Length: 163
Image (cartoon, rainbow, N blue to C red):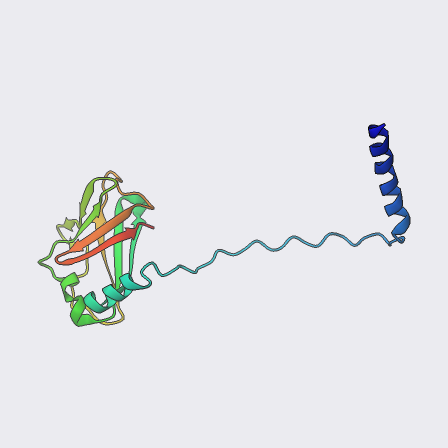
């Protein structure tokens, strides 16, 4: 009996809907699919707040990035100088830069080539200019997404993410 009531009720509802809805003209074609999204060029400031303020005020640098390049054979560290006087220690030829990856348990150095010299910029820093250095990642121990530290003399930047 319960089953008959449910079935009867189900058959009445569609009929009621069909009778109450006015006749409509054939519906227009479905709206076109939205265009594919273009990739966003927005990159959040990784050093917003205290860390960004610290690097700008104490070391005179901003926009610190670490990138996985040359199919992982080279890790490139870049920074923008905002205060040339404070940023001098980063370009000092006497200090040997290191890239530390605790997850991989490695310490990378800037290679020195016979005819070229070290793969880093050591000229006097200028405000507004971006400087770089390349660390050898032979064996590709450092991977994209790893958190690394860059040490140059007394300068130390921790928690940089390899892009």
